[in-house]
Amino acid sequence: MIHRIRSDERGLSSLEWLGIVLLGFILLSLIPQFREGLDWAYETLVGKNNLGPDGEPKPGVLVRGLIVAIGAILVFAGTVYIINYTNLGKRLAFLVTGTAFFGFMAIVGLLYTLYAPRGLRPTLIDGLNGFQIRILPGSLMLGSMILFTMFVAALARFEAEDGD
Image (tube, rainbow, N blue to C red; front, side):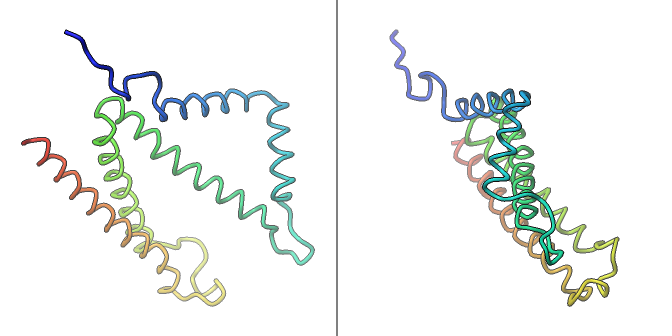
């Protein structure tokens, strides 16, 4: 019997190509000259991470923080997705990873809302009282709970469709 090759069975998928490109980027980052080029490009585009003349941090501090935070989330959720992708398939892996990620973020938001901050007292932070400092983690918790519920509902629907 002749087996027709589907489009996703021909060659590498876009996810696999992305993995190859990122692996190449990681291997290149081990070369000192490549890292120096990255540092030069970063300092040219954003600026150095020093304090300005007024004592305030330059925008490079914020940009580097955003890059690190987004990169950490992508690595955390991406590695879990890749492992699930190899065992569960594309659609189910996305649903399981999304459910786990937003469940984790809801728990983190809840814990931070209840028990933070442990360092400076809220009265020492200019203009923020004990309630105001918990607004951001509370909204993180609420948004993550909503997305967690949506992913659980999508998983239930996927199971129902798969069972038919």
